[in-house]
Image (cartoon, rainbow, N blue to C red; front, side, top):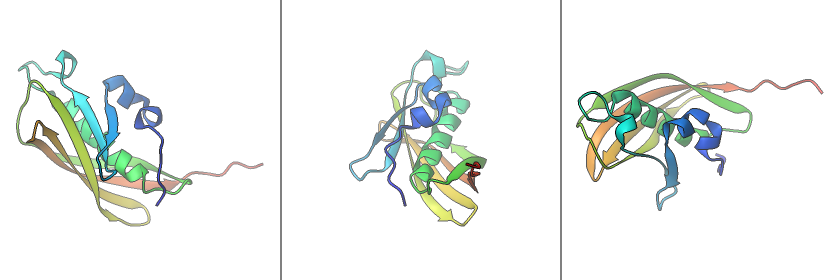
Length: 136
């Protein structure tokens, strides 16, 4: 396992565009953070499901990124989300954990909390590929 110091905002320009912030728990577990504001609300005034999906996908990708070798990269295959509560304000924090990894696939779990309330729970599958070497 490699220990990366690369910021997901640098790895994923989309994460930066959406306004995700990144930190680690006291145990070193990656945390993706999204402060709720008008940009992420739906027509009902609650956080849009797409914003939660982005937060979840990036949290799992960042967690898995820490597990990769330098010649590996990942792509999301699928994500299944259970939306458990609607929120309109606060700070969303997503944490992920690895459930299983084989040579080419990884399954992760992510959960989103807001002020101690569980907002969403998800499972995701990621494809792991090798980067191609260029001829010298």
